[in-house]
Structures are given as C-alpha cells and as structure tokens.
View 1 (spheres, helix red, strand yellow):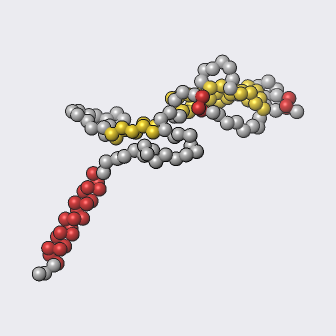
View 2: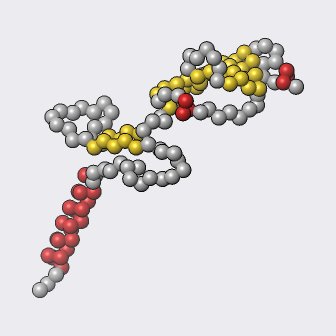
View 3: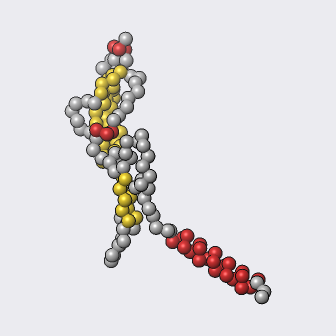
Length: 134
C-alpha cells in the first residue's frame, strides 16, 4: 500500500539528516522550540512511486525567545544627540498561566493625543468665554 504513495522527506536548513520521512498525505507538527531564533529554511523532498523527485523550500523566521520591544528608536532611523529609549523584554512563559506583570510594554502618550487635548480645551475655553454671561 505504501509503495503507491509519494514519500516526503523533511530537512531544516542545510542539515544532512532529515527531521522526518513520511508518506503523503500526512499532517506534521514542526517543533520550532528545538531551533534557534532567526531565519531557517524547511526543505521538502518528495519521491513519487515512479522515482521522480520534487523539491520545495520554504523560508521562515523563528522567534521563540523573549520578545524585545524598543520605543524611541526605529529601524533605519536617522538620529543625533541623546536618545531616550524605553526597552522591555517579555517571554510567553509556559502558556498555561498568564502573568500580567511585565507582559505588556508601557508606551508614552502619543503626540497626536496631546494636540487633540490642547485643541479641545482651547475650544472649550473659547466657548465658555463667548457664551457665558455673568
């Protein structure tokens, strides 16, 4: 029965030893916890019952480690002088228990909100001065 099915061999990066050899169709769970953070390539080699081969490569990025959030400096930003940074690192934990402390990155109040508040209070002051009679 398996002689008439295509065989699929899975490789990660340039490893010579496959992580799995399966017969199609199949569902497979790739455990990325065994991989280091960064770019990787999943290489799938299929062999048909007639001996023909097909290859497919899929690039992906693993991010299992602690997430790092930085506010105050963006990718490829042009800066000078002293730059205040807010840096936070948080982990997913064991995913069975949620820990609130340190799980969110605090952020400063955006500039557009300050402008909106000043405009609102300016309008409110103008309205009170022009429409309120003592």
